[in-house]
Image: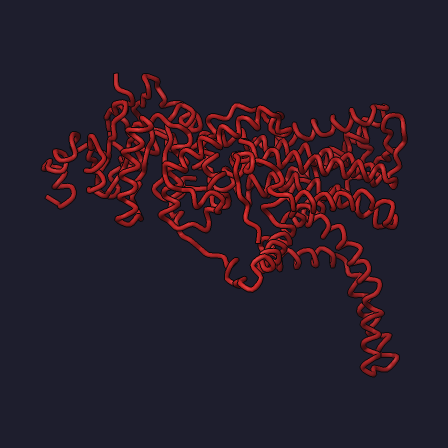
Length: 383
Length: 252
């Protein structure tokens, strides 16, 4: 086990507490940089989606994980970013300009959504953000002069400094990775400054935050704006990656996927946002794989146990019918969320920390270390 | 003019007069205790001062400045910090970040500077960190710096709340039952710290307290309340011997 010996206040401020972090994150970055020259094009494409989802995950983590304001409207922010890019691109606006414009516009709309949210708590805030998402979805479908309605919009390959960057090229992947890394670094910077601490204070006790001089309303709006702006940036990349956008891509399902990203990754950490993004992006091909191969595998098992050919064929078709049921994916998502909330509330990252601690303390690790205690001291809350 | 003044402060919940035309003044550098039976309106007065409640009538002055209409977050910015009866710490954060939130009123950096963590932000952070360290040293919190609040015992949390209030470098500090839930030893420590706050940091203290031995040890003056009204005001011994106060506590 490593004991940190701090000799300077700088030690509490710096991003990497000790050299081990520099080495491991350096290695990770190196692997990510050589990935496009090693991985198959399909995996690369998935990796780009991981970057985009992780960026949205970090954005949502700021709002939900750190400020404690739930949102089921992030698909709408993503849509606003994506449509801004697609619309401005039609008028030959250069990429850096519409990239920034999308972020700024989405941030402003996020701030506007934040205002009504000031008076809402918990489930009511969730409902308010869902209705916001529905409104945006409806506007995208009806405002045909700008969004081309349900027909959707084509998004051309982006051109950066006069070079066309195709959505499958390594350059596009590097761009997404850079946006993700910059978002994470920016968020970490925020978290070690007064604003980030004010967010966490609001999450844990609004009353105490207020009595310490935090303008709760202002910081909630700031949190909404920052979160929305980052999602808007991700939206631009999302639009370019898909090369075609239409309103039905930005439904409630997508917002729920973003919530899953942070819930499953681990609610209070940026690691969680990235791990959750990997999980959700890789879950999809995994489910498709199961859907295609499961009937065959189960039929094979049935045959192994000596079932007749007719029965095997019957089993195979039954399983195939079940696997292609409508809404099965949603049900699987739901079950996964429930299992995580019940058994691993700290998410994948929480599990990773436990595994790490197990090895650090090796023979001494106790099961009860992470047992959740209920301490009743907050009997009276001045809400 | 007094340093801090409440004039005819009232708080009515419908027909219930939680605080009823209470007037008192706190002089700079004194320790004033408010005592009274349960439900006498002591904490309500605190919540009125820190603007969690809006007074039904009456005015509050601090440094000759009317603060009755100030928004709650500006109360802290003016230099009035408080602790809570039922601890209100930021549970899922470390002790250090809890204390740094106490420094919030001194933060001057803008959002964009913080996103980039410019040298000015870094320099400010170091100043905050040094101030926090001074408070940690004063209140013997060294062993807990990087611990999460959710894992700490009640007595320590109580001290951390005091520390968080001190980190804002307040001019006036409101302590809501600083000794509730503490054992004899911890209460002793608390009384030393309260006197240190006055003598070393020059903080004016207004506190609500039930433990009469603590009140006697630290207070310069005492106010006794019952049913939202002031029963008696004066030195600790005078107030305790006042017939109305005895009647309120023991029954007439």
